[in-house]
Image (cartoon, rainbow, N blue to C red; front, side, top):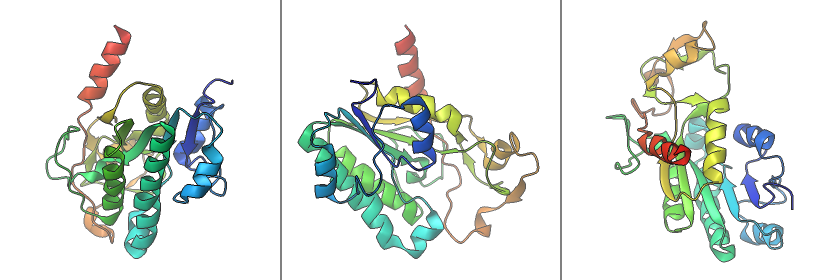
Length: 240
């Protein structure tokens, strides 16, 4: 068997899936037609004879303004789809690693630990939290919360009045791969330095313009920075 051939990744054509292909080339990356979330029968047929041990669920509908306009699609893709994936993993005793977001927090305090109360402020985050709820019903699972983007910063404007621990995908992907291959369960936060999105963007795009949260048509939380101490403790344990 090829290395990593017991791993299946959903969302393989997206930003994260494309990056994962470079470091997990032997994993399965089925197309939407081959592995149609949330079509349980379709997914069952694809996975039934593969001997998958870990499923990384990265596929999602992630645009807040588009979700505000079409919440039904987010319900189907992000909530019902994740529920179907959880059921599938339970049937085949597959470890599920679920990609979530820092937006599950309301942004009023920042430095959120894994066990802090969640309360989204927009429909995108509610749909991802709905997926988290399904995953939490399955013990053989790990929820990863983070915030990432391609490098250089891909937008002309960046929020001056939002604080996060967003990081570039090149830094986040190695951490995700370690977690996919780990024996960790529950929930874990990964990310970069706590700072304004504007300052983060200027590191790779000096000409980026300022944007305010009130300038966009959807609700944006103020400070959704993550406390990543759990990750740091786990990494230290791996090295010792």
